[in-house]
Amino acid sequence: MSDQPRRPRTSGKPYRRPKKDPVRILAFEALRAVDERDAYANLVLPPLLRKAREKEGPENFDARDAALATELVYGTLRRQGTYDAVLSACVDRPLGEVDPPVLDVLSLGAHQLLGTRIPTHAAVSATVELARVVLGDGRAKFVNAVLRKVAQHDLDGWLERVAPPYDDDPEDHLAVVHSHPRWVVSALWDSLGGGRAGIEDLLRADNERPEVTLVARPGRATAEELLEEDAAVPGHWSPYAVRLTEGGEPGAVAAVRDGRAGVQDEGSQLVALALANAPLEGPDRRWLDGCAGPGGKAALLGALAAQRGALLVASEKQTHRAGLVARALEGNPGPYQVIAADGTRPAWRPGSFDRVLVDVPCTGLGALRRRPEARWRRRPEDLEGFAPLQRGLLRTALESVRVGGVVGYATCSPHLAETRAVVADVLKQYPDTELLDARPLLPGVPDLGEGPDVQLWPHLHGTDAMYLALIRRTG
Image (cartoon, rainbow, N blue to C red):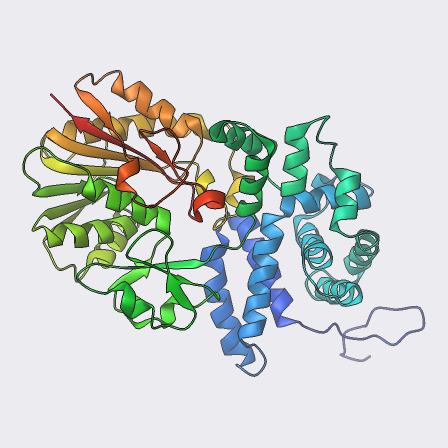
């Protein structure tokens, strides 16, 4: 008998080994990591791309291949809700009964068919080849049959079929059309204050690929230096911001490699700048970042503090994240201290600081452009889990600042339960405080609402949906 493995029988056709497509295999591996390990695509993709370049060689895996793999992963995750609705109409069983790896392949195929310019025949054949490699011939036939049904209509045609009419159910219509969970649509709509145009603009912005934004850390780098990079343009609002408009690689920028600049959303920069520039009564010598990990705001605050001869204390509860903060602050031109401490059980005396920032843990609904998978992981009950911590951190911040000093409460979520509700609840316990008008501290930034707090938006400001309230201790 032969030692060779038996090849599957076919209908008279010779067996053909499936072609391995490194781009689509990489995209599939990334989606599996997101699904199986609750990984984030922005953390999973870089090592997978490096591995593919090393394995395939630059002649077989170039920048265009990396760009396509990135688009397949992020596009599939962003539009997952829409594609699930389409696939549900093409599969003869509930999607929950489809094996997750098969569903990932189907979603990749749906994105190529409905969300890219890849020709229909190429999208189907490439995805079926991927299925043969990662799933086997049997399930590849199932993938082929489903994708041929998906290919019968374009995206608009499918949305007419699977999305309920807006007039019948506005929130469910928007959830399917713009690929957000219904509860997230409802929460964002409440935060915006109503109106169809605004919520549709926001949901569209959440589905767009954000530009890479750099920050030039004062005293160490300048925006002018960063603007010498290819495809670099000034930021919209922060004097330290520079945008890489063609998906540039931050690691290729010398100032970023040296730690003199970093990757930081412009909304995050504006929060740090507003706190640094808020009017004080009295000395301005000690600053605290009470939730400092992973270190972006701390690095900017440390550089701003150094310009005034102030000390920054950067506190982070988790030891490994405190290490990231220390790395971000390494080389800071002024004095600083990094400590691993629980922000709700401070390692410092009350009234020790002149300025305090707490950028509290939250649902992250303001950064769905950058972490599209978060919209599918979060649940309404997560809000209850964060609420005690958010209130505890703000209370500690108010007790840590001296009379006449200022606290900045910030979060990367526009959900009212994580923003105004937290501030209002805590300030009831601290009558000797006042809310400052944060809007003048963001000069040139339009559409900041009625104040005194500030809510930034992707569709209005091109930033993450950062929230900021500034509070002064008056007694």
